[in-house]
Image (tube, rainbow, N blue to C red; front, side, top):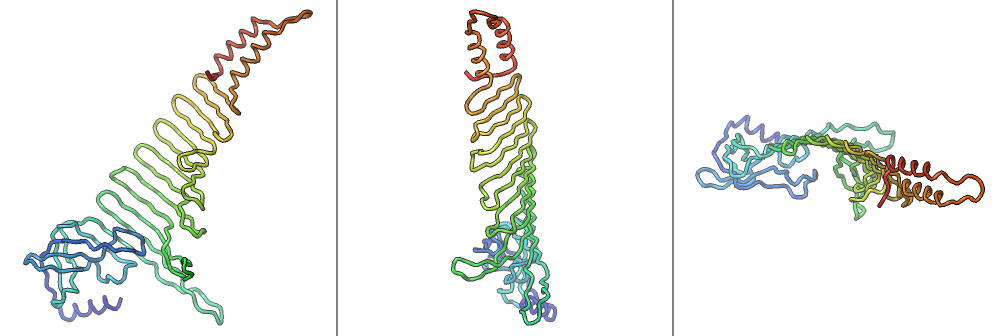
Length: 315
């Protein structure tokens, strides 16, 4: 922050700032951002109204400090005012905007020191960050923190891991809430809830495999659905569905199904309950008793008809 302090001091003492109208001709995106955001930018290139090109016009006071601050990224080809301090173009900054494409706000926590035992080196608490990113379609609120990890080369490095995010999307008419696991090596999403204009969906993920869904619940105006153990597009656990036409429970791995419409369909192990009962009745009908009482064919036929009204079989 020393360059910022000296810059402010110089402006305050000299009072010499030149301002020009200019057109934005390039947004200088940051490659390999520590915050893993491809939309980040800290400078732009412009052409003044007199035709002079000025590169790396600042979007914030200190372009070396990328951890915090407010950044307004102008629209490409929009007109702005740039101010130059003491005729030094490397100290140019945007003083007024006409059109804004995106806004970043990043706040870094104060660094506090932990209490250390006698003879041990004092350790510093990791930084935490609150970030807001907004454009015409969406606004995202994100909490993250610094974590020390060992890279593939064995060297320790400080990386940023997400903790919680909240995204409002006006274009898709949705609200998306995500929570990340904080205890594993990989920063995996463990819970996500999406509230859209046409449905609400909540998913819980395996802490070690983000593509494996432990449980997903979907609610919309036509149905309620609950799925367990989803890998890719395949559901390995139980499925439950309730809509205006039916109630349905199924487990493909265990080959079990229960469906209720105007009838019941019950299946297990590849067998259908109605089909098996009808087969039983048919076999009983075939019994011929030489002495005693033979099966009541009329009663068995009536029972078979009742089963047809209650249960649904397979063709």
